[in-house]
Image (cartoon, rainbow, N blue to C red; front, side, top):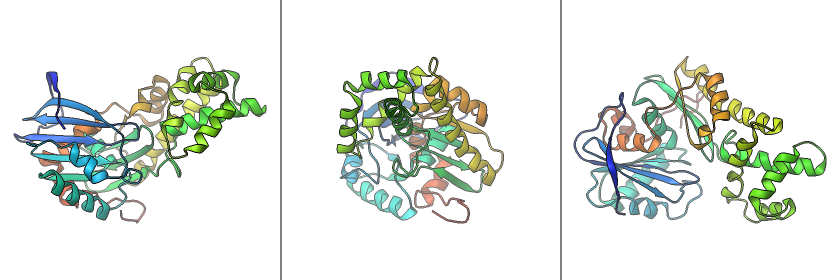
Length: 316
């Protein structure tokens, strides 16, 4: 892949130390898209958007990752959803490194999100995109909560919000709740009646975009519709609960929130109120580039590119 240079190169934010001279690629895979950034001699020089990827759901993952890494890259870091063990991270690391012809470090997307959010300092990062999860570090211990995928969790993420919107529309038609405004907004966004929408969703149950597209529809109604506001605030509560679960294990660490869902003011404001959260120093793709070359990330790269997590006594 070729990288289109930014019109103006960007310095790293204050609080983040630049890696040594070289070209370090950061890849943040996600359920809606994959974001790629190139860090050249300590400055952001290119950004690229690629199709979504997930270690549990995507075929030909090794080839797709290797295709993102152009010749001349010093090293690449990858934050990948669906990575559930050190062994799977190590296998993918070796396979992609061999194909790309340069060192590639693969870990879960929580670790790279944390590295971008705090620049290597202790803290908890909550990420809410298509799915949701949280990763934290107190300087010695690591812990994770959520991130279990759309079938088993991801409460507060875009899929969960979109599904809640469609469910509210269906409840209104059934006469058991929901709201007329949500029903009409869902129909307008879908371009069809609810019965047809239900059939389409069940025909492709793994197509997450069939429901995530209704998340912004729901949050746009929250200012005027009490049911939509309740769902948005419930999403914020789920995200705050992820942070609180890690604080119980790691102590009263600072919290950052990132991801498309938290770009919605109605969700961000409630989440920030509940969790005391602030915005991150840098996005996850920058964290992935730092993992590739920053001295502060050596401890991640050295541990088979994934972290030993304090998860109530269960090690990942």
